[in-house]
Image (cartoon, rainbow, N blue to C red):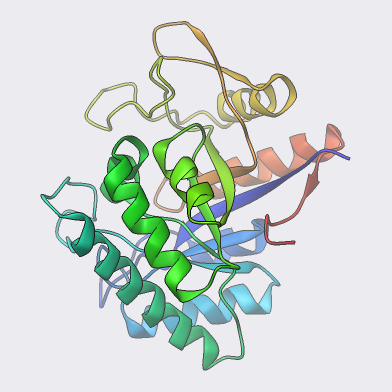
Amino acid sequence: MLHVDVNADVGESFGAWSMGNDASLIPLVTSANIACGFHAGDPGVMRATVSMAREHGVAIGAHPGLPDLSGFGRRELQVTPIEVEDLVVYQIGALAGVAAAQGVKLRHVKPHGALYNMAARDARLADAIARGVASIDRTLVLFALSGSALIDAGVRAGLRTASEVFGDRAYQADGTLVSRRHHAAVIHDPKTVTSRLLQMLKSGTVESIDGRLIAIKAETICVHGDTPRAVEMVRALRDALGEAGIELRPPSE
């Protein structure tokens, strides 16, 4: 039976600042990527988000980002591979501790924002992330952009990987994501998002922003928690997957 994971970036509030609708989104997904305090999140938000995911039986993963709260981790910073490895280890360790306090074990790791995109094309940074993950727990699944350098790095490090796709993001012809600075980078219509994702799952292809059909491997689907219609999109996606006979389950199972 065809199956896929649906993951969401959550726990991205900070202090008095609120981001996303985690209470409505988390029950609808199979994997939760929880911010670890560098690009978003704080100890209290991390604890509360782990608790919500645990309550709904959702697989918990670390969502490490660059140290850039004001830029929400979406600005590329000049970082060395050793700095990347250190910041990844630090953030995974922080969330692992919060999760352990509630009797929960981390199941996966997914880099956030600029760190994710940088590692998708830079093998040195990708290897640094994979080393950091492997040094903590080789059973953790590494989520990475389908066809990217980070998938290759995970394989080299002996990790299980999950090729990630985005229904609400436009793709370049080389399989990378269109920069958010582009006016058409983010797709907001739930029907369009769902249609694109079903095409990825059934045919292994997606149309790039310039109209080319490119190959893609879809093992986990990302829903951005900060997208205004995220909950509506996930509900529409779940309905469509159910009608297509596609089972939902996390890659760690």
